[in-house]
Image (cartoon, rainbow, N blue to C red):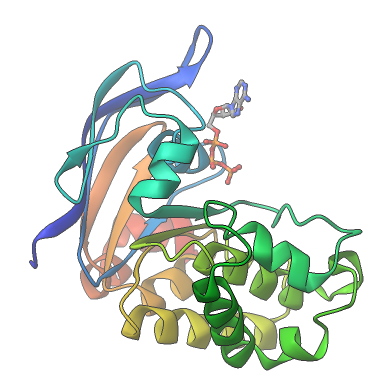
Length: 239
Ligand code: ATP
């Protein structure tokens, strides 16, 4: 495996008295696409939120590009190069597509020429967003909203892009388009950690995967191995 960009070790976190993560270990190699699968309530979102600083860990380590980030705030973690595309997209529905994308670059001055360059790059990657740049984000289709949320993530120039549910509620064709875009983003140099409820789609896109169950890692390995594992097929693929 290439050197890890992200190493999570012994991570514990939860909400008040409710502990959700129980000693999670996970590694994402630089340049890789890794998926995190598991049933509802397994703690996938909580894990992403703990990595991105929205939930404070009670124990464990989150090392990223050689730096310890556990306990840092979301702004510092974004600045270190980790961007999160949240479940449900969380766009500003009455703001334009362009302005939503610019929100992703909020750590830089809007006048910084690199912001315009990045905006052009996102528009090229997602021509539908270019066509709809002045439209309110709330008027986009579900697939286009996901493009906008991913584009906003890329606008922060992340080393690691974390996506919480790529395909949720979307038509198969939209999922195909988004999967292709994600592979393109990855080829251009961004490492990806993907949460996905559609396990087959996730294992197709990712080269490695982790199965989370009740806040613990149940299995991990190359996607091809997980896709054939009886435990995965029975519990998550229904075959
Ligand atoms: P899903 O796919 O349904 O989102 P998940 O694997 O992402 O599932 P989490 O959202 O991380 O799971 O939830 C893990 C557990 O933490 C669940 O039991 C959930 O009820 C609980 N939980 C999540 N958010 C909160 C919160 N803000 N306060 C209290 N408990 C929470």
